[in-house]
Image (cartoon, one colour):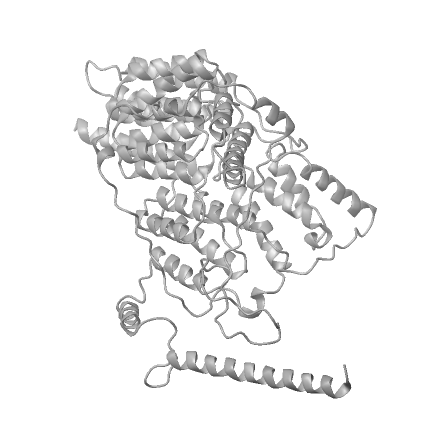
Amino acid sequence: MSIPNSLLQLWAARIASKIAICSAMTYDLYQLSKTRGKDGTLKLGISDEKRRQLAKKKKAGSDKRTVEDVFIESLVAASSCRHHAPRRQTSTPVCSSNSARRTRHPPRIPSISMRRFTTEPSKRQTAALSVPDETTREDYHNLVNTYDSPSDMWEQPEHVQQHFPLAPRLVIPPEKEDSPPYAPRVVLPPEDGEHALQLRYWRKLLQRRPGRVSHSRLWTTYQSLRSPRLRYVADDDIRMAFRHLSWVEFPNAEGAMPRYFALLEECIGEQIPVTTPEWNSAIAFAGRWVRNSTSAEVKGAVETWMRMERNGVVADHTTFNILFDVAVKAGRFALADTIFNELKMRDMPLSRYFRTSMIYYAGMKGDGDGVRRAFRDLVNAGEIVDTAIMNCVILSLVRAGEPAAAEHVFYKMKQLYEQKLGTEGPREWQGKKELGVLLHRTAMRLRQEKEEHESSFFGGQYSAEERREEVQKLTPIKPDARTYRILIQHHAYTSGDLERIRELLDEMKQDGMNVHGSVYVHLFRGFWQHGGISYTSWNRNNLEAFWEDFLTRHAVQQISNIDEANDDPEPSEEDRAPYFTKAVAHGVLRAFYKCAGRKKMVEVWEEIEMKWDDMDADARRTLQACVDQLVREDSVYIV
């Protein structure tokens, strides 16, 4: 090819490029003119009517922002970010012939980056799940089908999705969206041999399985490291530290939340990235660090989630599962519905934990049919039923005002265990938690394999049901100590059936279950509620028998404190012998006042003071005030 021809082709290409650029600019100016109002101002995707409503609402109650307002504002802010916006399909292709040119078509908005959990079981678990099974899904449907429900024949209205308008970017700056979240961190070497020895011992604790090491010892060892501590710690060790601190029996365990948030603050201060699962654990601690969640805990959980978004971490379905659970337990049903709508709008999956929360939600609303419907949805979704899920069903039916149905489910659990399953679950809390994670991952894996098989070239009916039933046969469904406590609590407060409580306690003792101190709290409160009436089993003799049983168990089986040098985990709260608390002492004092009178109540108070060695000043002051009040009431009654 001659040189003049080459120059001619180059000149023609440059002319074509300029024409394309001018066309693109003309198209952009046309699109921009469509977004301007009559006064030339830009429209940001919100209609004038909507703008007036928002301004009116802000003017009317600018100083009365509820948790729902904060949550929805956070969703609006997140929806303007490309990483948080739902996936949108476009029918116009994007030009990709020259990356340096501007496209004539609007850019495609990327979808949310979803975190995928690893569901591959170990070889031992795979071998154990190959046992044949005769249990059918209908057996698990029948666990809660105590009678036909007329509402099952009604058509349920479709769930209305709520779409929130776009808003100016308040979460992630545009320049940070396409950049890496962080650069590789440089970990400093130990300063000397002693420092290296401290780091080595801390890593040794981290290498143990979560839940199998004392958190007190782990945290004390971490605090003893030289400052700034995290600059000498690798990312993998930080990940393991978060995992250990989040692996607790109960979120309200003493010291669990402060330790976790202290490590979180140090990471943020050192600009060390915090992953989505670690933020999720922080949200869970913020919303569940007390036994009974309130609006304050809901606000703390939402604010922690907002902080997570501001730090550029994308929420996943687990994040919304936790927020939903916290809102439900606090009785904030409208907020729970908003969270559920947002999860559906983002096309996020409903996990085993979320479906269990739906059962709990129906019980909180007093909807027995909703409890059964949510349980059927869980089974139909391919989830594996175990004792923890059935405990949620029983508790929800009791709260829905259907104790007879709850007792029926309890009976069928025992019957199914004796006739078909024959598998007893782990009794330690670590094993129960590991089992729940394994069942969650196994069900996810089976659903994924079924979807991949049926969508393949040779796809057809897949035998996922048979494999799921094999797993179900090995899954424990036998009632545990929590199952019995749920029923005992109901009979102590509501039915007043002391004989049924005796039967449940005898079953627990025959099965070798520990009678937790909370059981005695329910019993003593039952005597306060039902006692003091003639010809009732809630009398002084039975009260004294239960009180003596409590003192005997407290004296003989009391667990000593773990030595500071011991690396073993703290004993399970479920396995602890009955011990003195303000709830126990308060319950027994009022019970003896109701059933035996003022004099006996004072004697019991003196006995408590003598045997409760580590009673703190606050407990003593509170209980003494209770005794004084009961004495005054009795004096007024006598006069």
